[in-house]
Image 1 (cartoon, one colour):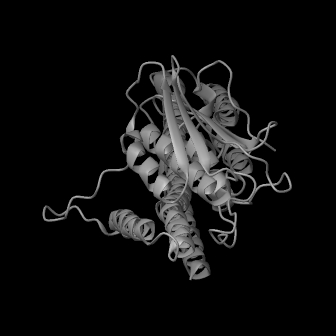
Image 2 (cartoon, helix red, strand yellow):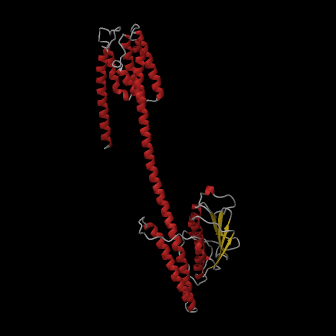
Image 3 (spheres, one colour):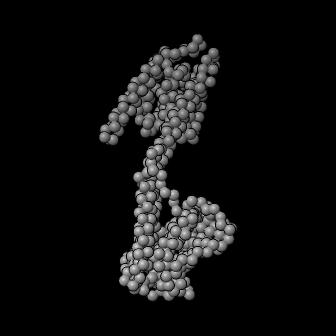
Length: 424
């Protein structure tokens, strides 16, 4: 289809050039008959055919504008030197060549070739006839008639350059919009995956620990078993509610009848998290240092999710079934530290956990497989301009330390001061 359009445009341009040449030949013959009261044209008309023949050079002017101008200017100079009056009709081939030159080349080329053409034709026009009442026509008139096509051709060139730049910007904007849309989709998928992991993994790990503990104590401590099973119902209910809230974001519409979604969790729900961990057999101690500072919703959610993931892994892997949460409100950021004591089995950590060692002493079966908990915590911390370090402690156990600004900001704008470093 493109080749058909190109062939059609080429044939149309060729036909326009042929029609232009025919019109220029007619204009030249008519211009050779124009004279003034003191300047009669030569009786012989045959010299005019020199310029008529040179008009054929306009045909390849789209490809060779400089050569076209040289040929037509030479023909016009020969006629004006013989005494013909340089009228617009006589100069039509040269004016056409100047227009094509200005439209198809740069300003410097147009200025050099145009100035030379104006100078030559003005000089030959004055040399070809005595000074009389047509002096203005042979000087000022010649200059003005030749400058007109140069100006129009330059405007055409600038207009085409502007349209090309607009089209290029539109194409670039289209490509950028597509790339940005793909990037936003990828970021949204990652965010949803992280939210689903945090919402489900914690509650399932706690439920797993509760169920294992209940099975271990069923025969010897029936009352405690019943309490653990009651807590298990609450844990699974919370898991369903968080899962429903996360999936509800995907289904939410802007309609007025849409059910309101549950607010994103924050540090205000930390007591509930501690209670759920306690029912799973993990003793959690929370300490806060410094005056509490208001956090932005994103930082508040990030701090809660980091603590939740760290405690989830402590529930599965902490040898002493105890963990400590420390919240330190600095001048410009919140320092979150989650630690547990004990000695890891072999000094290694679970691939997706934030706590080393084994959390199972025979009472609770191990949770199979790894996950993306540690990776998700780092991504959350970096997303708000914070840092996170996670790794085994020299004295034993495992530690997760995060530094989060009170307001989301990029990593480059993070506040100065000691920062936790990522383990490698």
